[in-house]
Image (tube, rainbow, N blue to C red; front, side, top):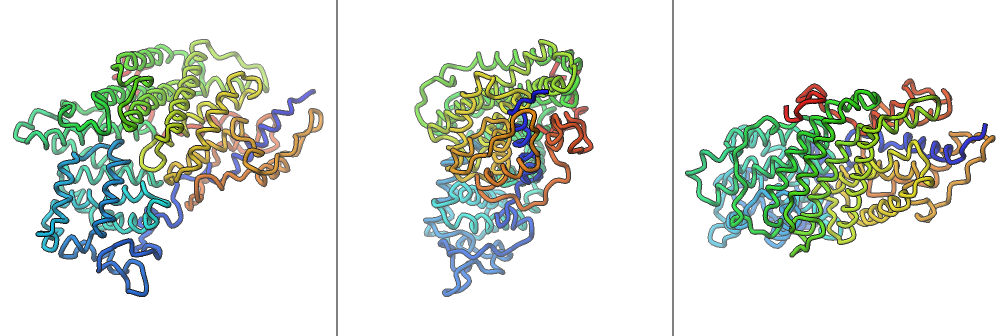
Length: 600
């Protein structure tokens, strides 16, 4: 019987992907990274220049570095000059924060923040201001501003970024966190939000999940979700409360969608208004942007609940067929949201600044990402049926399921196209926001269909390959946060496995020898070894995670495709699909009836 030679090439690439250690790592903990050092109870940052630290922070004149005891005792120092770096470095960190973090994660009023910040450096008070004289939450918020500012400047921009992050992150986690969680204030909420964002980006997503839950409950406890009892606040404080609440709501809903877990804000009766337009300075986001993001997150909540209710049925076409009506209603609501956007928030609209342009494009990336999540179970079902039909008789997938699978592919391509636009305009963020997660997911969605079909037979594949190649090439030139190093390596691996990634010749490596023609079945282990030697994705995006690999191998069953039981993994041939997009949420939590109201 003749055998398609391309099949064995795909098998060999898939087997190499399954053997790659990054695909089995649980969290992207990077050896020597500040977040890893802090949680491993390492008080001493690596040897580094003094980077302008104050007199108490330098080990000695002839031995630059941070003192061992200084980290433990820093916050007990009597004045702020013992805590702060020098003014020039501090200004750079704050400026970096407001240039890169605040536009994506607005939780401060610029004027209000800078008034407090300037007070620290006032020539008349700097020597007398004690850390104990300041609101504790704002103290820790400022330290997290320094940490995130340093994260955004890693590399040539700031050689001392790692020691700065470790110093202030250690203070916040070991001294600030107990204080932050025992009292409630808006400054405490801001500090917890910044800590959650940092932990999410540096490979501690479970920790981030726990912290953002604490921040949400604290925000609710002080009434940030309501507007009814804010009459006694001045206009600035009232609008800061609104801004913090809606940023927290957006972030928590997005993290819940990413991790597939319930959100604390799902069942909260919210009456907080949007921040007044005359309060928002308009530097970071165009007018009306926050209201549209909140409306989109409401749709995302319904999609997440729905997908949680059917995600375990990805291999049951009849169950998914029964769910198609609800899925189409959700897609209709998403399209109606998009159609209601004002002209200045459309992707083709003119933007006054690059920040506005990035915000608008990212809004549409979020929209397409949610649509691709909605269609994902249907796509997996279709691919699974196609795989099974190659080894025997298998009924075709019902047409409504096919249409929703196509929705996921179309949304994935649109999402990748918007991210490509951001990359071409040098507006893509790889360190402090979740652009790279959207990229990872879009590539996965586009690559999954080619696990059951040949790339060369699809006329759309050259355009998809071009988008993946050009966007990934732009990202390779960036410094990528640890969480996204892991996810992008996995995306690069699956793109290579299905034939959508850059060919090895394009990377200056030796090409893979041709696979044997039909009738002369190749040895899979030999071909896998050849590919492993010629295409080393370990060299992309930075160092590998240091955490031990998961005992379960995602994609392990790919070894067995079309080869009988030559590599028995103990799983069925289709079990790998369940590992493609792990859904950690409880399918019974907030589950809707498949034909019912998605809001139930």
